[in-house]
Image (cartoon, rainbow, N blue to C red):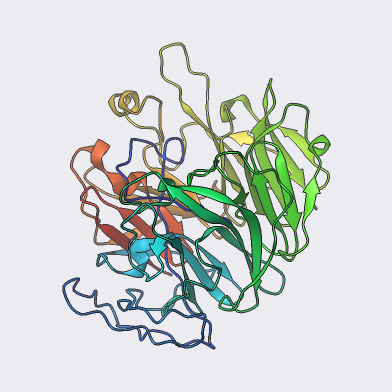
Length: 453
């Protein structure tokens, strides 16, 4: 389940991931062998109050100050349905406000944040050594921050994924920064070597040469500017670089490159996920969009997508179904509608007219969005799909396992949003994590939606 490093604190243009969106990221727990921070019920710490010191448990756990976690109870399991979301505003220093991606694995959870200075604080100079913050948790309630040296100094973690007997991370090195101050991953130009790191407990890590993909001459911190560890499940890790380079591993140590001849002529990869025992990829050739499936990654079978899928730019995955999100050609009026198609096996696809359950934006909003966008955000992490709309008089949300049958979510509380839909950052940058939802509102505050079953 690949999660991408995102930057919700930047001023976001109008872009919904399910057709125009951008999303943020979450925070993890610590393995049973490490010391954890004591949960503090539902209390959100006062940002002005002193922060308790995180106790050092092993040489890989950072002895830095961290506020108590805001997750009051163990998150629902991967197969448990969500029925209610309880929103709460996070303190600025809360780890959940800093998380950009998270995965669940057999040992608990691992979360990634934006680059941090070696001392754990925010970088303040463009030549300051930085590394990716990594948090680990055994239960989703108590979290530990890994030591800055656990994955090597100046290491930028591009993604983490589960293996059959542990966990693996894909890394590059932080080079020079282009922002001042360089707070976000987007600010950093990355450099080799490309490495994979493996661990059996998410605290002690061993480095290995990464997959044999050709690195781009320039690698900025944005997705697409560097190799990506795709959001797939054990026992396969998939790294992609550019439109055609793919490498696969079962353990994060030995990597097999997939020859370009395994893909259709002129193929350009857009997205790839694990689904059941298969890998499912979407992309396009010079003439048409296609879905490809593979059981092992070396040979691929092509499947025609309905015209309504359009450009087929993204896959949103649940445990029992998939939705492909694309952009269609439009009708000559300058509006390019979003197109959704669904499948319950990755092979047979049908269009989803009207983009259920969100529907399409009213004409005025669609024009301002420069395409007929879905009226909200669509997310999926392999465990579930979530559709959410925060603007308007009533917030609304739904969950689904297959992308065709949706159950309504109930809400307690609501993130503070602007009355003008264009300023509703929370709907636009919604992040779906195994432990809940996060989003950043117009004033820069981060909100956490804690799920209930």
